[in-house]
Image (cartoon, rainbow, N blue to C red; front, side, top):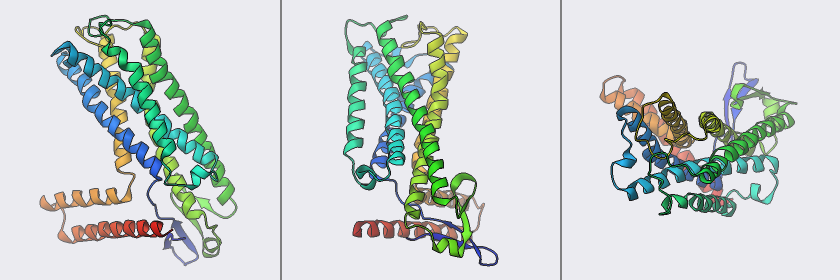
Length: 337
């Protein structure tokens, strides 16, 4: 099993960390779906609240009623999808950590359960929000209040995802800690962040064959835990606001932004979508290849601005090319397996 090793002083102590491979296919699919929904939410919802705070004009009311309903439907679907796609990711990781020897855990290319989870949550979300298109519901009217809809929305979008993500994230932390202690406590020392393991050459030679695979699990689990924590931080203020003031009127449309409560609600939603936007970049930068490419782009810009020399750019290009060739080698090896 291949690993990246760096010899330290004296040659008796080394630092080893298995090279990072791609995430399993199901995780990649769900993270891509989550990133897409988050991006759409930024364009639909966060943009609206930002304009509302700066100009006190609600873009939902600038055009026809059909546009208002469509914008409402898009925003609610993005919010629900963002929450439940994150639930699917953390729940899948929790199952993989809980049952590492199951058939689903062993088959890294299996997509059926993740596709079913994404499709089911999408259909339920669309079904819940179809009420926004019902002619009998004047959703674009100021002060519109539908107790049953808002209660269902609170439970479906806020409370249930919050509880699921909190439980699965804590479970992932506990399972990861237990597995680390079980596999490595007897002959390894794990540094801060679970990123580097130090051991002697003899201990390194006695590593179990599952070491590299386990480090892939650790990396995936860390990404999932961070994503879940970002959601919990962003969703908590919205949950508290809606629980404290469930009769808040300027939820669907905002014709008059004149009270402190209106401003607080808008700022809370901007905070939520800002936190959600961080998950998109977390997905992008979880790949070593993408990180090396971004580093190369920054160095090219600095070179054009005459902030660095050509020799630094050449070194960055060599690093990026090495990462690309390494990725290709890993893919070819996996295909053979």
